[in-house]
Image (cartoon, rainbow, N blue to C red):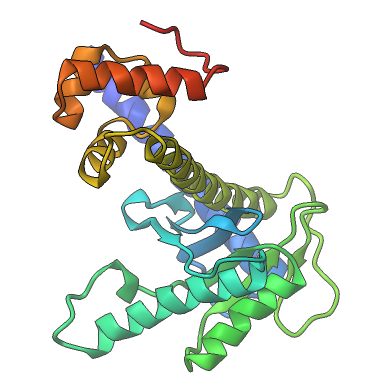
Length: 267
């Protein structure tokens, strides 16, 4: 009886969540005059530090709820001076070109990219919205609504309109857009930080005599950061890198010298 009551309560809660999400989507259609119901929303964001280790994120919400198995991350190939527009254009082209290839070429497996969104949400204002429109036009893709959501005032930029739409601060539609946008931002930043940490770790290892490409790759793959390797014993480092205990002690000693501010307790 207790299990049945618990299951019933959970089912009622799930139904309420679905109803709230559906109501937010309906409100979104009306508020932004969308061409169709946004059953699938894809949001994109870019993260970089002075143009370095630039990453792009793609998150997917279906029926107003995240579909994490469809999330994708991109390592941006453009380097040098940061250009958010060019980086966003690269990520969108790669996403939709892959989708078109999956749909049109029988030799390519039909993957998650073959499912196109009803609504494309880009983190940013008018410029980012225009990038999305230009990429879809370039690839001759129609039937997808494109909007930009600017952070400062949470303004929504729609195609063909100079002035943004300002939704009520507590409207269900805006709360949903913010949730999707923030998820794209979180996903992009987490990948960017991981790449930046790996690059920093790699550069430190390059300065240690006796650590060649093979050992360096093994350490990066196993630990991922200087702090994690500093928290390990010489025996653990030796096993991970395939080196002697003496060499492992030399690696740890060199890392401690190069990372005097590490918060990890030395062992």
